[in-house]
Image (cartoon, rainbow, N blue to C red):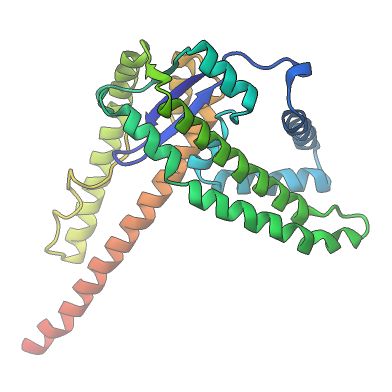
Length: 295
């Protein structure tokens, strides 16, 4: 397998695993076979033009889009079974980690990996158990005729999803503890890709800053320079970059992961900026009555 560390913004990074050697069907675990069967069924439902199956997939895709990109990234890492652990220790073949050296220092990439692997472990464990506890509570919905027990299946999916993310994080810890990771020779390629992405991101940022300054001038705010602050978190990628990265790195499935991560981070930063703008408007509005009183 091969790991990718892809900064989405100046403070958030996506971890993704490309599985180079897929298991043969007779070597797959029961969970792998069940997962593949569920995936094929979902794809089949998506092809329906109408009906409850189509509605389930439409709403389901919206829910999937909101599942944290960090969880999707950890889920891409295969669980650490006893057989896999033995094979990795016996072969002692190191896993390549690809990242942009201009954004992630080669001396600290292992620390970044460990942080991404461990910072959400408690959360996934807690939510996995809550999902398991909720399964029997939702079971009576199955008594309703015609409709499937969607709440039960959703809780099953969330329990599996959290378990898979937790398992992936522990696999990363195992690799780090046994010094089984190394910087990939492909890492410099990402410098070029991020340089290209940075041009578009820079233009978008300048455009937003100009719009922000104009809006504040119209409101008469004296804090017109607040938005331009290099210490603030800023985007490094846009949704347009997903296809470019996937093609250049030859990882087709990476496009969806990048687009999802960019969308979530942009939404988070947008909400933060809206709160800041609202605060400035309130401060500006509170100053106006005092000015009127003096006059």
